Length: 381
Ligand code: LLP
Image (cartoon, rainbow, N blue to C red; front, side, top):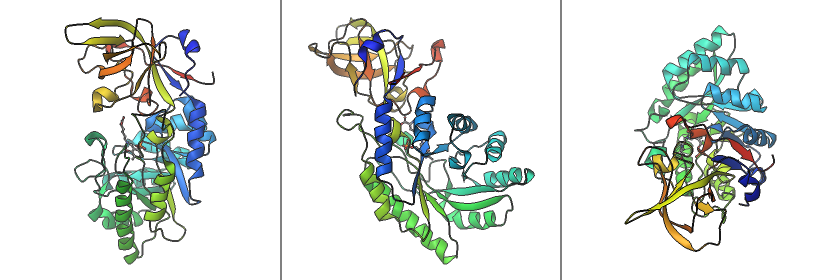
């Protein structure tokens, strides 16, 4: 990615920098590999920065929300309500009512008690809520344990064996209309075999439904396509071709059926970087620390998941290399971005980029230690 380092000199750090040109390139790649019956709902949880949402809205994608706050952010960004789907294991009455009033496309329902509440609230408003059941497919994914979601031990969705009774129950209710099934097996998945396994499971479930004379309009396969954190400059755009081809080949769709995708990370991760300044460099007998002004409050992924974000010295890219622990200013030992990391020598005031931070970066920031939330800067301001 190209960084306008001169412009950055004038700005207070830390901040998130979004390259909207790369985002647009990514979005056009997504669209280039869609089949006519494939629809993408961007998973807003990855990044809800208004400039980013506006760009995704302009590209014609829908959005996948998990809270009333996200639904509101999408409406504010200009998404039509009928392009919004709403998932989550714990939807509050207030949030369900907001979604009903807006007239969203679909609720992804995660339990029978939730179904009954949506039915009740919809009937009270004299409306009918379109719903899909989130089914837990018990498919493992080759990713970090904290971000795999499709196993029976996870809290998400309805068990496969409970699917038929749940559908029968939904069909008996006047406030809901069942339109589809929803799945999601996890995040940062790079092995297409994992998505292939999900296709197999969905095909089996569809056979079961067909035997019962149940036909559904849509199959929502969730998100999860991963990105290259190690070589972001070599792979700035994920492999959407293989991803969509896996589903095109793997799913045995019924006539007229639509497929919905909920991609988050793959759309926004590479276009965002956290920009920070070196405050101090200090050494002890065994380590050299580069202390930067961003911390785990700005980007929590390394502390929470042991995730690696590539680090670049923007100010002196050609300086001789040194090895550092790159750490933040927060009073926690886990406030470390990278250990034993080789970088062109850093000095106080140098600008540093933590790459591939567009997804689950700014949105997961906190104000721990009474720190201000990091602002967003875009390539086009
Ligand atoms: N659909 C559902 C139902 C989800 O739970 C998620 C992500 C997505 C779609 C979007 O997944 P994606 O395409 O972005 O992989 N904070 C973690 C990631 C948590 C993902 C949660 N669910 C991280 O920083 O790696």
